[in-house]
Image (cartoon, rainbow, N blue to C red; front, side, top):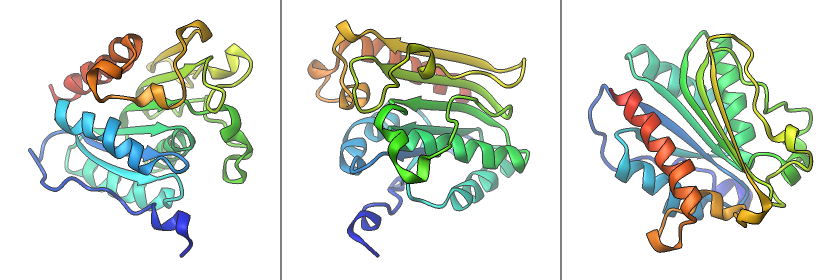
Length: 213
């Protein structure tokens, strides 16, 4: 096992809440494990009722799908959230679940494009066409993010593959100065970009509140 793989083990919640809430698989990007743990993962655990486990982008898609499929059989809502390279992985997980006819209630991708497309494991991965088993997709990117945004504006947009899907794309303008890491910064509150707070964090919280309801 190399050093990179050592940072890929799952970060599971210390305690499990209600057994009827949503189950969320959160996928971090390259070297982003600690940052995601201290920001978006902590935010999800503190401000939503989802049972969130963080995985790395090198985790086996089928093994993550196995866990989510089992949760789905227990009538749990399935949520997949991916940041940076993890966003590519999140779409691959959703596609694997589609083959198993497992619904994904919410898919969230953040900063998943740009230089991430140069990574060999993401070659030829179309992470913009959202599989039809996904009910709602929230896709976020920033034109000020040179790591995770595609050069052409339209290449950052997620698209539906079925009429029933709800797709929301939020591409922040370069003038907003939201960096790659800024897209998922949650703490301290005073350092969070106001648009990240309202358009990303509050939007995810509302979506997950709907799932819990």
